[in-house]
Length: 460
Image 1: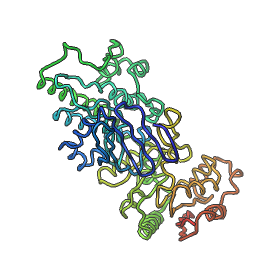
Image 2: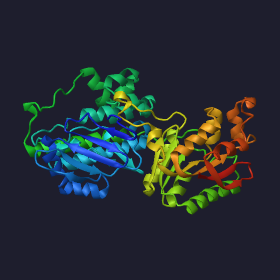
Image 3: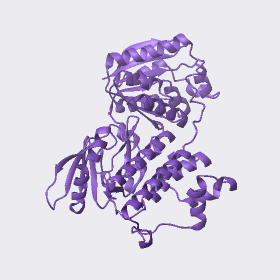
Image 4: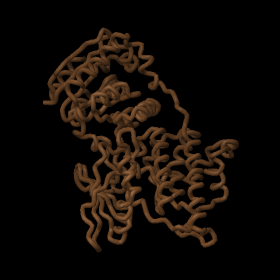
């Protein structure tokens, strides 16, 4: 992908075609050599079923002239995300969808030619397969899934590194094609190396240094079509078992228990805060909400409850994963991401153009931005000037924002000061109002008994 203009990206890696995104328009161009095959799949019952179920991005043929590129238009997923921003649960869900679609393709004479998390986007809590050109006709006599190597490098090995070595999934930002077994092997303890599923996933490939080369199927491996399909199906089920075995256990963190252990809130204050947020959102009826510092999703769920699509950013993996699990279980339009507004995801790839930055994707994308219990972290821990925070919020919201101010007397404020109170003497509610009212007008204000103040602002 390469950034051509503001909010415009175009793919270039697939020889079968390219994708261009400009604003809300998403156009896929398929080269004439591959056009008939892509059109045949789109017209199949399988493709129609996937699209109706939401497993495959919708596709509308714009132009299909003989010996000319096939042009297809897709709806733009509301907020595109990248694997390095996903929670562990989202990684597993994306892998499960990839394998399930692969299995169904085999039965219909198709196959995935590649299998990377970058083929998946999340629409709310639900993974959606978006790379139409990854689907091609299958050699009926081949029992091999040639994309397995990529699936192992980009799905299985990152999950193994996270579960067994504690390597963050966000580290894949700089590993477009994932890990090799040799990247993990030296760091695994001896007994761990020989335990399932690491024995077959890492240890034996590393020791034997075997690697499938080329794209053809050796003649000795070719089978009768029925046998080849059965072997493929068995292998896909085995890969699914490996994926499930690599799913990390739910982890608690300092912040994943924050809502339950927030002793600086009395029950009445907590209730008043919830009521303020819900009352504001019900009066605004926003179609889209950004929840910065979303934690385990308490306020994201309130926003979804009034009909908004919600994107939630939080730096804590465990909290974000809990938020996603809750949204998934309730089929809520909430997309939690592991993202830091103070250190936003950068553009990466060739010429820094294969992905948009977090802030580029979010700019004026939301009707309302919520910052509840996060502003003091930006001011104190990240030392971001108040005016810069206000300017950022104004750039992200089209209309409203809900802000929580935390006073100097608050225990969490005192904790973050770390004894450097003199550095932050200038931070007070008056400064907040001075800077935010450069961009917004005050719609409502409510002070809780613990001294925290909730504001609803409307953009000027």
